[in-house]
Length: 331
Image 1 (tube, rainbow, N blue to C red):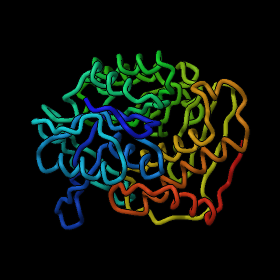
Image 2 (tube, rainbow, N blue to C red; image 1 turned 120 degrees about the vertical axis):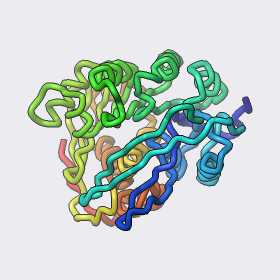
Image 3 (cartoon, one colour; image 1 turned 90 degrees about the vertical axis):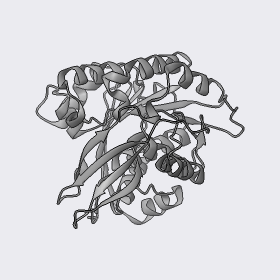
Image 4 (cartoon, rainbow, N blue to C red; image 1 turned 90 degrees about the horizontal axis):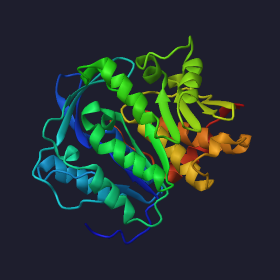
């Protein structure tokens, strides 16, 4: 395994796949995707030293996935391709731009790894301070890979960020899936979830904020970042603060593929900029810091949804949007 020669601040672990996105004419357009893969690219484009931990296939799609990561400046923990094939996702987008997924994930490259391999790769990056996972990595079938790795990262003192990003339509046992996701979230210092994720987890509460409070209270995390679609987003802290923000100008949504991934990248980029410790939500959070975090995340997501597929914005594009688009903020 090669030693990382340039600074890596964040490591991501999880799926890399090809999104086959259905067009109006019935044809499917292959797009590079996978929530964690999108996140790795989005972080690198926002000038964050990023290490992608999972292997990639030697097939055509795998080489395209690897090339795009390298082009964006992502470090590959396993640069040598593996014989397993690339994961596929068939994506149908409805009239509002919301995607529905069907996944093909048996015997695939990004799952050809282990907790030991992930942990060893992280150990080689001396400046690594934060790790991210979520989405399909939260499948119960992959628990032996990701849960021990998360435990090792937390023990090493790194900030653990977990994106719930549920995929219930492809999980054969929904109740087992819910329980496993809640178990995985126990390793998180920062949880990111959407209002739809909270509904899928069947949490108590008649609003998304109430459900988010319940989830945060029952976890060991110090912060929960909640996305609310067109209503913006919120940050809830263990200290009891709630911050909310949204853009004031309407945008034309092409599709929402990768929006949550870009949101999380914007959040993490701002977290690193403020040098926040792993438990930063356990103490009072300054309003200005919370505003920076939420607005960075929302601007990143907005730039994503205005394009087809997941095309993560650069940091300069995010900063330009923050200067030109008004946002409301409360908290």
